[in-house]
Length: 285
Figure 1 (cartoon, rainbow, N blue to C red):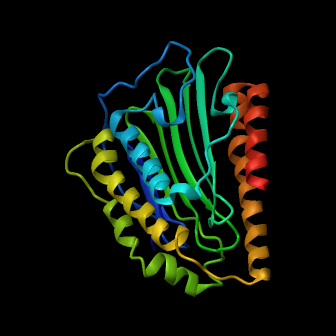
Figure 2: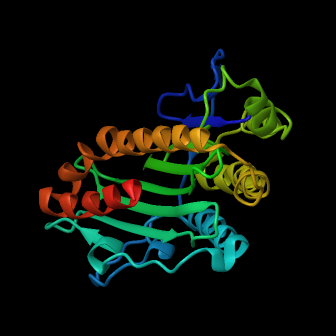
């Protein structure tokens, strides 16, 4: 199977590498270390999404390259980002949590509905910081091809969580042809296997990102662009309605489960309402 979800953690010493199809998890052990400090900004300026200011250089380079690849390949089919400035960058009242949101919608002729990028930085009460960077690309219901998602979460200098996925938009058990087209024929399982590398020596998180995660993420994105975003799949009206309904449920669940509880705690209710309100409009437009 070709849709890897990977967790690397030296803290617990039992990283999980599995996938989104029913299967037995593959457990791998990694010993990670990092001696590269995070950048800190104290000038209170409006930090931009593509700056990724709080993560290490390899982490930033990965995210910038993925965003650039998306934008360059999709070109003029993407409209400019028109989010309000207080949604493109936001922070809590004490300045201990910062975030950025970036959205570009596809034009009327594009199969791409929108791309969405974000980063969150939060100082932890125990010391250190939580850094989350993510990039998603969503397709319109004119196609049932998978979407694209990458999220990199660093909660300590020795802990990294990676979610790298082509989320299916049809039930894989009921549609084996869909499974074959997007996850078997593409041989993305080989990329998952590359993330199962068992180093003989402790490996730094930055080395892990640069030498292991980045190459796999780039292949995943290129595959998605070639096979999903830029290839036409003809659907009937009923099929498109079914895909649209599934998309709407999944997007709203993302807000309800992942964001409605965490954002008020990180940024306060006023900021959370502002940012989540914009996200709801985007997800349901």
